[in-house]
Image: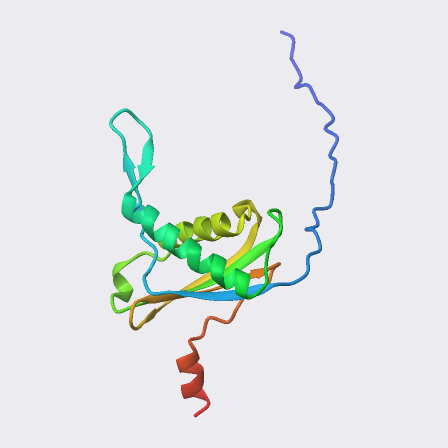
Length: 161
């Protein structure tokens, strides 16, 4: 009986260092009086296949996109689509334990990228935290790999009092 040996192939590994483009640092903040809709409630399945976005989610995205564009214009920001960027999100609600944070992040990420013309594949870091309080969200958007300390300002004031 003849024994067959596995064929060994040489694989050439080409390693190209991945460096993000150097961009001038920019950042801005915006506030929205409502929380993003949950991914569980954003899309509806069609009977014939496929999905579409609910009109309430479209309306939320359009309203928030306007707020984002106004905040970016006030900060004199017009980033390139392939700019590495990050965002830090603070969600406030009196129903803190009734929703899943991660289901709300993607809707906001898509809204930010659409409003600013950014490619969401270039999000390098995002941080998110939820807090008890009147419903609203605060978001910091910045270029590069920076993150924002998500300790609420009220807590910081109490710590230093």
